[in-house]
Length: 299
Image (cartoon, rainbow, N blue to C red):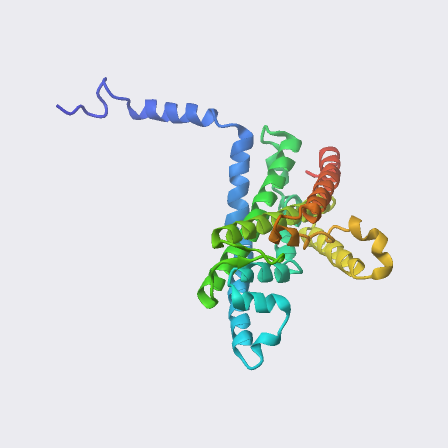
């Protein structure tokens, strides 16, 4: 015979509620905070709109490349356009190079600049600091959400671009910059490594935006400050007279992933880039921590 829910052999509603309450207590406060932060970052309409724009641009560029290469004199464009015409996999690289100049940095700066300043401007920062996680853990949660957003943005851009390349252009074995031909699976794996490298660059930029976000209660000011740093770095990187300072600029190694498309892989440029990104992450992460843990940012 079936027993009723209220019988002694089964838990009643009060016991179930008590079990759920005990289960909730086992979840660390910082994890609940991290989960809430991820929902905020990836479900906020403005950030969803940014991701939508990042997904649309590779589609538009793919169609534009297709029309340019199929028109009169279509084979006489820049070198990477000719590579795209021969293998659609290269559309992922071409689009990533173009979007690293503006759109990806803009999206990351918006999220990073709003991380702390946005909470302060909306008056929610004091409530967040009431969570028994501490300021250091709160800052770590904010940085982790920026890392995941940067990673998702780069993978989204490259993924959509490669998909468009498959739809619009021939796809097959990939010819590397060194002239070696590798299977399509290996070529796609190297494109994935390039996307991860670009994500590391955006994480370094995100740390700059996070540091700026701890210095003001106005998110627009923090976003603008990070974008100004990007713009100034790109301009300085194009001035030959400042060549001695180029390796220390935050954007100098953003495109130093060409070694990943050589056989054997040339790790020199990639290693220099990753070291540069790590240095900026440590420096500006320390600035953000020192400011956030000492200033009265909750007032």
